[in-house]
Amino acid sequence: MFSAIDMAPRDPILGITEAFNADQNPAKINLGVGVYYDDNGKVPLLSCVQKAEAILIAAPAPRTYLPIEGLAAYDKAVQELVFGADSAVIQEKRAVTVQAIGGTGALKIGADFLKRFAPDSQVYISDPSWENHRALFESAGFTVNNYAYYDAATHGVNFAGMLAGLKAMPRGSIVLLHACCHNPTGADLTSAQWDEVIAAVTNGGLVPFLDMAYQGFGAGIAEDGAVVRRFAAAGGPLLVSNSFSKSFSLYGERVGALSVVAATGEEAGRVMSQLKRVVRTNYSNPPVHGGKVVATVLTTPELRQLWEDELAGMRVRIKEMREAFVAKLKAKAPAHDFAFVRDQVGMFSYSGLSKAQVEKLREQSIYAVDTGRICVAALNSRNIDIVIDAIAKVL
Ligand code: LMR
Image (cartoon, rainbow, N blue to C red; front, side, top):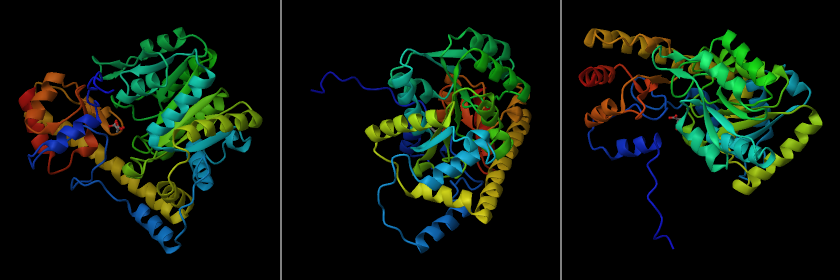
């Protein structure tokens, strides 16, 4: 039965972790996957998470099924975080939220939902985008196109190209936008550019799907969420996937959510009923633990403050690594200008390294994505000199 099945290619991101795990060199460094490591090279277990877990353990609860849409306290806390507690879309009950299996799960629920109710629409993702965006929407049955985004010459956004692309899309097209900390490029839009994007999306009758997996890693929690709020205020339909994998360092708990904004409360109720069908036919209902931890932190003022401080600590350390990366590379390879790395936002740098250079780095047990994306959040004071030496060698 399976004799004709071809070998699938390795995943462009998680496949690198597989290769990294198989590498026997104790000095290996993984700059591939988007994971934040502390300065000791460890994935942190945040204090706010530990304190929330202590609260949960002190009041043991049976593990019954959650509702299909997830924990009510979690969904509410997510809405308030994503849209702002005073948001009109919450007050008018136009926003509905379902707990999801990480940000990827949220995208998948959204993709399946859209395919059911907008089967003829096509999807547009940035060029480039997170590798899984295309695969995920294609596997939901969509044709996936690119809109112009990255300008390799300036290491910034080709905004004129992006805007022209948005304006040329047929009405009803689904446009996937990165709310902050663009993955993989680290190149974000300015506030004024977002104004133009929101106008183009609204006037063009497009369906915006905002992916927010890195809230808090750019300028701050509220600052990074501002785009979502502006889209919500623009009045059209809106889908928002968000993830707590990175911001709570809860990767393996798979905690995310999909929020959909409808035109009226009544319409939102119908949307929710259909989202529940998608969830029910995929995995029935979400797991309990991660959602409870996040809800506890977000709704307990001291823990919430602790989380904000810990997230700020991660954000600041990444910025320090960007500064160090630029300064050290300037000293080692003065002919090459990497100053742009300082201006990039979030966990990643689209370093400009070619596939061949990335392969050469791999020979030195330093792992990056083939596109040249490196995870700056995996650099630390112990490994940065090794990485800089290796990059200088391959340049
Ligand atoms: C990444 O881009 O590395 C992360 O979002 C992890 C993943 O699932 O690809």
